[in-house]
Image (cartoon, rainbow, N blue to C red):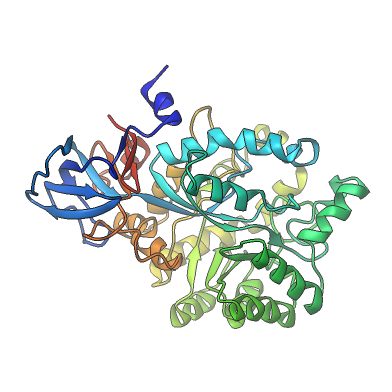
Amino acid sequence: MSQIQIAADKPIANSFQTPIIIQCGNVWDGCAEGSLGPMEILVQDGKIADMDRKVGRPDGAKVIDLSKRTVTPGFTDCHAHMTFGRMAFAGFFTLSQAQILLKSLKWLRQTLFEGFTTVRDVGTSFLWNFLTIDMRDAINQGIIIGPRMIVAPHAFTSTGGHGDMSNSMSYEVYSSLRLASIVDGPDAIQKAVRANIKGGADWIKCTGTGGFVSPTSDPGVPTFTQEEMNILVATAHDQRIPVAVHAYGDEGVRRALIAGVESIEHGNMASIEAMKMMEKKGTFMVPTQFCFEDALVNLNNKAYWDAQPIWIYRKMAKYAPEIIECAKNLAESNVKIAFGTDAGTFPTPPDTTNTWREFPTMVKNGISPLRALKAATSTAAELLRRPDLGTLTVGKTADIIAMPGDPFLDINVTGKVDFVMKEGMIYRQP
């Protein structure tokens, strides 16, 4: 059994019992314009207690030699689906909730081991209970291993919108789903938002336009009226809960911005004018560019599309020029970009989540390595309202990762993380 698999069962070290000194060959703190060179970090009680060229040596301290690594804050994926994993959509209609949870355990561990110490799970729209809330709480209690989870339990959609998979369901399953996720009109929306907050939601998520995967919706078309979007956001904000809106097409993005949402999820067909609205309002965009990478590269590859539903191909062919243009415009904008992948919705090889591949995709699309790295660290922490995360600073939570090489010189080293500490606990070590 590999060391990584052993670490899956139990953290390697517990800083609440033992001070830890990390000897770093190179450090990036989540804010600086580039790497800061060699440093040492002292971790005690789950926090960064000191950070300097040389730190003190408390009695009994454990020394970790990362002198050949670049050390950074733990990464955050602001748009993930932790119950999806490598599971086909059919699994949500054929597996019990217990089976879905058990199948998610490996996905949770693997995400953490790849350096993502925090994820925002933005809606398991096919589930009509609060499974992701239970997962979040089990991780916090140390019952299961995984990244810190910040959760929007369900993704609300309108009838026929993205997430309404009723064409694929029995009447009984559809009836249950409708109680949780499919809402029409202000009264139903208000009730659903309040029920999610009662169930423990950290965020509220809705789908403001159609999507590419659901069979009947159009990604370019808004699915909630302005009145509906306004009441959804106002109801969440009344209880101090932020809102994330899935929106591809420009009109859906604009409606969400007018309503006052905190983040636009995807936004891959937003206009320059909509991006200027985001800049003015300080709204974050989570562009999830990697999930389009394969489709765009293989747009004219018939063999690739033979294995895909025909409606996905038709939508991609229709909107590919807008997606490409939007990525260029986003890179040239001053929009606050937070790192998100849509992890769980795209194919992955065995024993990886491919979550890190968002980094090189962003850079390929013109986003600088610095902006991409901040998107997964300090900017993500700002979006998630977690000032204790996202930077390596004395007093902050000790979420620390390391990788061979310098991500400012080669962004692909983000896929080679081999040291992972979360809240002072070491889960992976070279």
